[in-house]
Amino acid sequence: MNDIPSICEDTREIDSIWFPGEDAGGFWVSANAASPHKCDRIRAYSENGQCAPIPFFAVIKGDQIVARIPAHMVEVRYAVPK
Image (cartoon, rainbow, N blue to C red; front, side, top):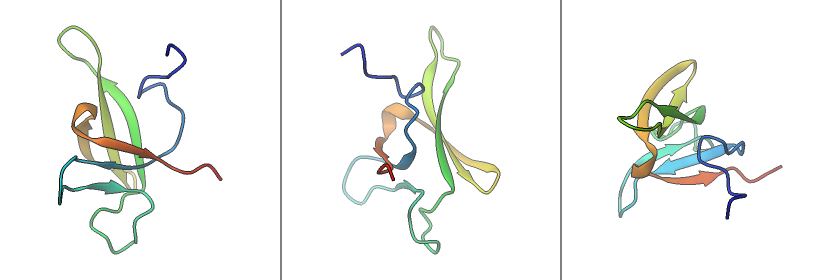
C-alpha cells in the first residue's frame, strides 16, 4: 500500500468534495454554472498542525479561495481522465 499517494501528493484533478450524509452539501467543479455548489477548482494542500501537517482542501471560485475544508470532513471524487 506504500504506492498510494497522500491527498496532498495526489496529482489527479479533483472534481468534487462532499460532506458525508444525506442532504449534505459540497462543491463540484463540473456542476451546472447556476448551481450554488459550482466552483472553478479544488486543490489539496496542508496547513500546520500541532505536531504534523493537516490536509485541507481549498475551494476556488475565480481567483479567490471561498472555503478551506479539513480533508477528514469530506469525501473526494476525482475527475475522470480525458
